[in-house]
Length: 146
Image (cartoon, rainbow, N blue to C red; front, side):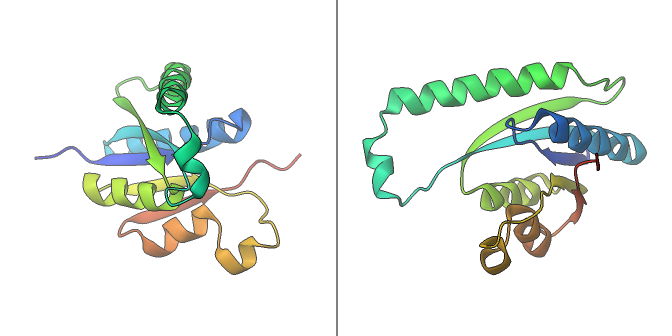
């Protein structure tokens, strides 16, 4: 039988909110007897004209750096008996999170949400898109109020 997993979508740009997301996800993983999968998606406008001009070596280095950062972040968490895995993906953020959640048959996805920009009211931020389109439950975590 495949072990259940909880996915925590980490940004790597906002350490404070990443920690809150990871700790919530870790608590859920403990509660469900699941493993924790920390995922970071390198934003990639796949059909963008600009993509053709970004050298492959640069993309590889960005991926390597992201993997190292995510792995280092995972080691700061107190998982105890919970297995913590990391995964770095590239693509459109919400699409890759949804694909991973479906592939792993995730129990729940934990994502962060910031106050949306005006344009997000029309397009929808990543958290809202994940919540609308994934087949599992989604927990949206807001940053702590100061």
